[in-house]
Image (tube, rainbow, N blue to C red; front, top):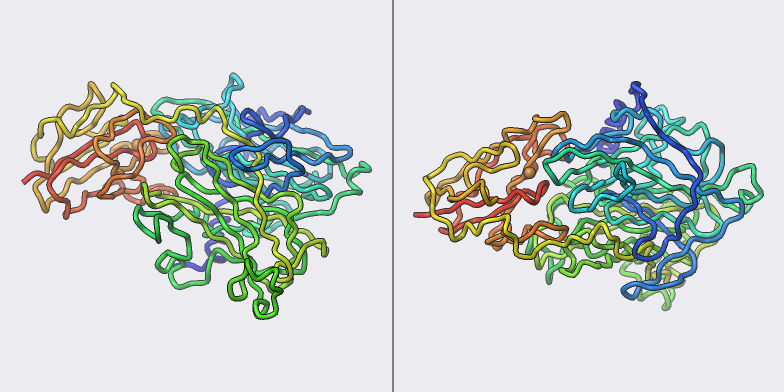
Length: 553
Ligand SMILES: [Cu+2]
């Protein structure tokens, strides 16, 4: 296996094709726009599944679920700029990772003059201006990278990311991300179509911007982004969380994973390169995620820590922030109907060169398995000594949210549906060696009304081979999974249903051979140790795809 730094190099080199590109047909737009306030249910949006960034907001005007809602600090001479790339063609069932340039946008629209970026938030929009429902299209992630002045793209500066939980990045008063008009940006994104029909979206991003020529810029101290990830450096930094793993219904990565980094250097750590102050962070998790945590380790500091600080210290490691998942989802910690807490504006942590910052991600494991999960905490840091030493006084505080429930998460699913059969009650079909997947149908054994009717069978000790026949049916790829869900698994599809919640777990990975996120193969065989019974499953990529097979002696 590769070390973290090697992986980072390799991963970011993948950006190159995107950067080289040509083919310009962009209809990129720039227009001034009034930024809506970062509050409430219909408020500020980020984007889809990927990542969130630090957001030390300002005061608070309201609260949700026990959390204050962040407000945006007032800044002199601030401009509210709106950008977008698109139209982006969304192919049936796609779930691929790509780059703005490959999509025909060699130039990513951005501010025309030097200045400071103080806030970023992103979203998806359809041509009619509506935000697509999250059970239809995910922007799994969008990562904005500055590649200018960096001959080695491994040094690209990842400065903003948006995930399906749509957290704003709001830098605290007095801080901004220094931007030069000559900077070159690319966007790495993963757009996931949960349906088998084509679609079209734009990625939008709104930026608060203080021009360098303005008086307002004189009040700003530059801050830099530090990408903290439990698998830093990977282009697709994921890990699987299995139902029942961990302790007491939760699993923390990497702490509870067996050899998470193959014996190599931990990928969840960063060594502080110079004295300074951490000014903000927030977590990105996937459904099932409960919280991410950030720590600062300073060799020897535990022994000399003050009594006041000791409550947050274990050994030489101080806990400095927990980003909590606040689920609005009625079914609990199982969907994208969630907001992540971010650091409040007063959170300022002094760190020294040589300290180690590390992050962990904790998931619920009582209810279901969570495949291809993430744990990311983009962190913002500035020079200076404005912070509190975490070994002198506790710095760990409750976070704030940048939004409440969002209407694109309204279709929760899970109610009775007449679209699916109860295959546990269906007659046994013939003994079957292979189930093919074509046109978004498992054959035989599909659960859709009007498509399937009988259940393919296999003798105990045998197995059925599933083959994805349409992995390359489109240029973006069509990749499917066979993932166990609790029988009969025939309720309505939504952001909270179906889940990988079967008592007997299995998962094929994404059947495709196209690099991340695919499994590198087109087929998968069922476990040979299954007891007699009917096993229902779904496709994690297209959750309206369901099926069953039966082990029968
Ligand atoms: Cu599928």
